[in-house]
Image 1 (tube, rainbow, N blue to C red):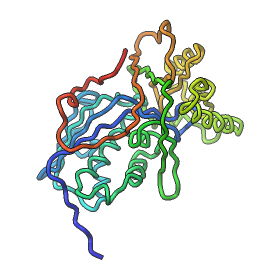
Image 2: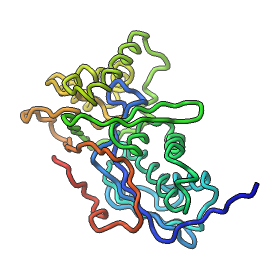
Image 3: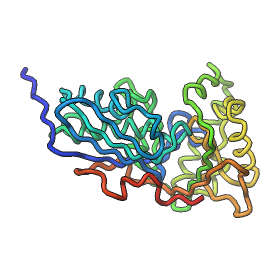
Image 4: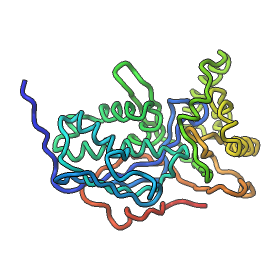
Length: 317
């Protein structure tokens, strides 16, 4: 059987990818939400070498070579598509905070997968949307962030022997995500290391019921968000590693706000707006982000002037 050679498109392509919040309380490693905060990334096949420029979040910290996560994801995708380009030029305008529990790594992975597909003439045929999700989840290690980043909205993700799958559901209009972003960073690996190897059966049963209720609350009955976001599988075990975030979650929930740790933290996600009299204290940036219902969006061309602005539009602090 002959191998069809890989043909690359001429000129640049670009992608806009949303921030995400995973777990949402009881939906550990399964539930995720796409938020209205975005990274813009452009890429082009060049004659040789790899050049990555970064502005905004992570500028001066993230690598500018093959080790950049966007490039690593592109390389893995090109392997799936049948061939590597001679060289790559990548431009990243990052607005998603790094290592804060808002899916910065998933955004980079999804951006890389989507850019590589777009740079191959028949890339979307060789690797369809289901394959893109499977590959992104393999690179990330779990699907709860890459699913909403790819699909938008509220996603339920799971893994079968053949790989990750997900569905996206529309979110009720009354759901208004607000994130409380601290200055300190967190690492997913550290947060996962804090989890026990086993949990009590009663805690698992409680989470299963609350996760099911959360699907209904997010899509149809937001008045149930507070009881629907109760969790016993991960947040308490991680509390010692992020005491300020855990204290903020407790304070918000005591005030009647459906608040959880966003992903592995330390950002706090509120799914309903707190009272105007509620003050999180010093050191927190507070952003009202809204829901991204579309997910990753690919287009031809370079980044426009507005897309190169590293300040996120729509933030309210």
